Image (cartoon, rainbow, N blue to C red; front, side, top):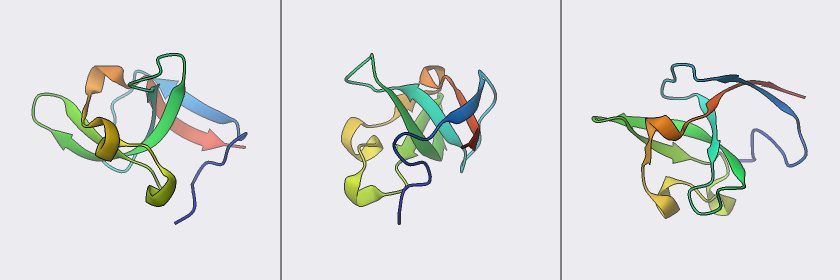
Length: 82
């Protein structure tokens, strides 16, 4: 599958909004705090932990690499791109 959002595209996000499975979210990269990443929410676990996946799994760094993340790490939900 190809990426939903390509490098260089501009996105609009809604900060600090409730998220659900299937949403695309913005968060800081777990290992590179100055980098923001955009991933699809695939699972919500008890205790506020989230599993994130990239839409292009062969090329994506996601929860398969960095594990689950805290729901508090999510900065917002992506609403549109252009």
